[in-house]
Image 1 (cartoon, rainbow, N blue to C red):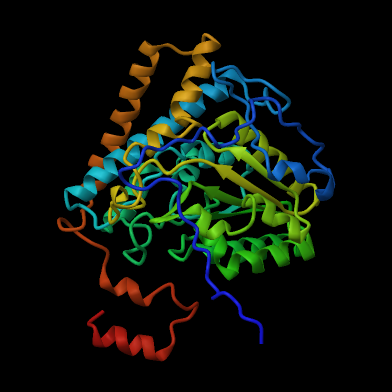
Image 2 (spheres, rainbow, N blue to C red):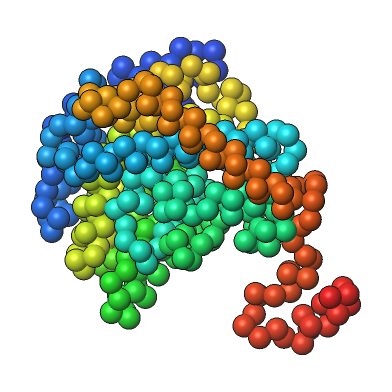
Length: 410
């Protein structure tokens, strides 16, 4: 028998660890406006290159350029900036509330606001999102009341979920926001199944599935792509690549694939990558994919390249696994600042107006928080009744649950 060297495994490592100096100069970022825009009915094999590039609209000086630009009015852009500001202000207040012991848990989406806010604007009423726990922007952009969101976080007497869901795991059928699952991968096959049901019924509504870079390594991700591609389901499959899956860098889940978007190629699904911190670019790509689904042209896979600026959650300390300076070094910048600069270039925004808008947003969020806390918080005030655990489980309550409810005194 010939002699062989011992086998060994390759374990991917992040480029930077705590104490090292982050340097993203080697990251290939195409100039804004240089990535082509194909027709909405393009064949997947004709747009394979879009899974390896990054679609961008806003250039370094704040101008909107290229074929994906020009799809939003001045009024829509100004409203978009205020919506993102509201999402961030909401995050700040709820993060603070958790530190004050008013809730047990919170998750911010700092640096990712453009993705959810812009995508929501590309949908129509009746469409359904199957989100992760970092898409609060979908609800806020759709006009869902901040008070209701906060009551869910506080698990108080007005909690729409009646204390059954972890904080930040919202649900609203009326606003096209399917119940959040802590196991993110499950949202993908459910989104595809919902979209298939819509098509079977001859409806016009489409679905959007959401997943993080880490959860693409789960089997649910691949199962969803099989069904979406086989039956050409009217669904948009979103991958938010914010570089970190809790404390695991994105290279672990990506494996040997060049990009997450490229994974769609094996299933014959058109796949694109977009600058997730570029609001006009996100909107344009989302609009393209949603139209494709609405025209019965099948699924689209979108990878949003962004960065999770905050901790994974209030239970996480990112300084243990990445440099503190990494967020500031991220080359695609801050989505709020970039849209603000764009509006300034168009002479539609000033520092004075930004200060005023920020004051208005913060006042709105603080007023909502005051109202929500009047219904109780985690440790003070009234809470949802324990009797609610017995209802909304079955259409008709079975005898054994009736007995348990009686034994519990309800």
